[in-house]
Length: 93
Image (cartoon, rainbow, N blue to C red; front, top):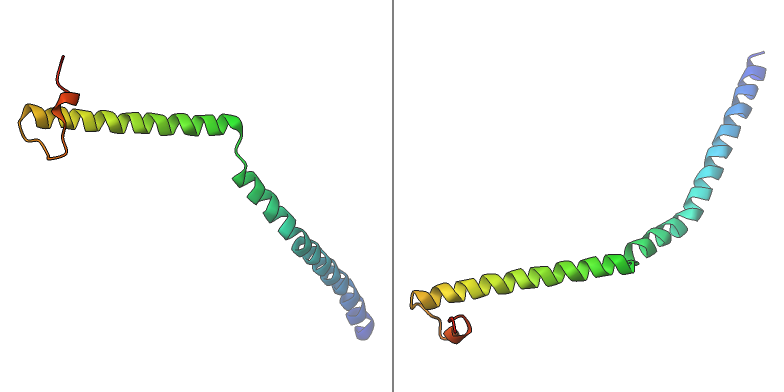
């Protein structure tokens, strides 16, 4: 009786183990495909995203130029210019 119960338990567990191994094999086989799909999605940008990124970069460059010009104007006003400063760029006309 004990051996029959152990055999039945062993057979039922082996089905679970085989199912788990099969599922793991499928997961391992599909992993490179899923990883490649995520990589392609991460690399590809839509035209709208590219336009938004270009606009952001242009605004940052414009803000940086504005800060530099304000700093130049301040240095020129206080007569503390650097050798590379051209005060004619910021003097009123």
